[in-house]
Image 1: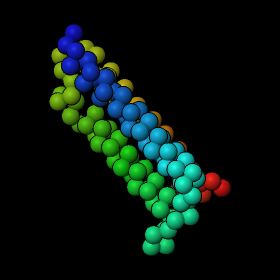
Image 2: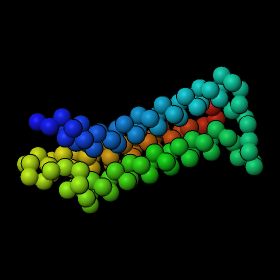
Image 3: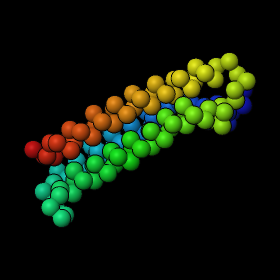
Image 4: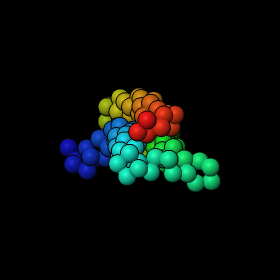
Length: 119
């Protein structure tokens, strides 16, 4: 088996989970820093810096997973070799993982937007 093909397929299938993990780390590190450095009440133009930053990070992560989802649904030939019998399975698995990752990103981002850090 081609080593680069295996890595490409693995990253394609697990891409949603990797994006969610990065988002999860971002949200909780930002909240921890806000508590440790005491900038949880900092505002810019009437909006809290921490919630706005988390909202932007959540939107970016969701957009990245949506892009991965669109690629999995529309352009499977560019990512995977269609001659292999496992191609449809891996594509469907990538779609399922991306959808679950979208839910996980929402669950990570929403509480951080609604609840004040350190509160």
